[in-house]
Amino acid sequence: MYDNILNAHLDTLKQSGSYRYFLNVQKSAQSFPEFTFEDADGHQKTALNWCSNDYLCMSLDADVLQSLVRVAEESGVGAGGTRNISGTTVHHNRLESCLANLHGTESALIFGSAFMANLGALGTLGKAFPGCIILSDERNHASMIEGIKLARCDKQIFRHNDAEHLESLLRELPLERPKIIAFESLYSMAGTIAPIQEFVRLAKRYNALTYVDEVHAVAVYGRGGAGLVEEHVGEGQVDMINGTFAKGFGTLGGYIASRALFIDYVRSFAPSFIFTTSLPPALCAATLTSVEKVRSQSGLQEAYQAHVRSFRRILREHSVPFDDNPSHITRIFIGNAARCKAIADILLHEHGAYLQPINFPTVPEGEECLRLTVTLRHSEAQMRHLASALAQTLDSVSSSSI
Image (tube, one colour):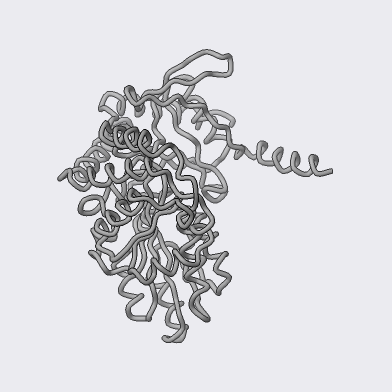
């Protein structure tokens, strides 16, 4: 009985075209974005990765790698415990101090992932304030949605990036009622950027806290990679920032940055922090090196954005349609899961271009897309190769019966 139920759900997923197939990528620090993989017949093939979030290629940086190896040899591979049971080292503390400095906050706290940070922070803060209500953007990431669910407080959903709708909801709430406005600075599927300045203004006017997820913005925006909050409103204007190491900084883990009191409260009450083995000291050391190196490289963010503009110019030259948004996320709307997968399969097996189809539940049904992410290691020749392959493939699939 149990097997039949699970198989039925999986069959439905496969028939819809949304079933997820994982490609076994053999990443190379020397040849990235080129990698090798084994096809269905067992043959070794090469392809170019166009869906990595390692935007600045910091996971491949020699200094970051050296820090990882050095501290692993000194301290071992694992932390050996939660933060309160021998899992706090000088490397954890140094990294948290660096993050607080990066965002201009009093304190910071690192988690095993940004997903766990959102669970812990939103879930804990939502319970802390009697009668709290969380106002959430309708496009917020799954981790924020799950964190809000854990809070077990009232919630209201406002239309994506719609400051007028948000204000209409705030206006109906008593000024003294605790409120948290939760949104992302940059939405990774559509590439849209929140009206951060407007949301901050509303929070101050209606006595609300602001919680901003910056996972796709840290490292690639703002002074020294501090993100879009720093770029749009400056330091000290939002109450809590969520960030990640796993994208622009190239390692693994997540964090929150805020006032010392807020950090101490989450540290003391969040189950996803208290009961999780801490990140390995070597990984913290490598992340610290990455953050410091990104902060020290003047013009790095501008150089990356120029790289994105070059990529989009080449796509236009080849008449490849994409959503022209203000961020580095380049999305090609497909709108059908089966067609999306078919395009991705052709690109991989016939053109050596790896783009993972984005299907439900990552995006709503009917909004299936291909998300292109260029990194600093992608050359102009590789961009032109992808643009040509996309133009051919999109044309051939759109005229087929898929």
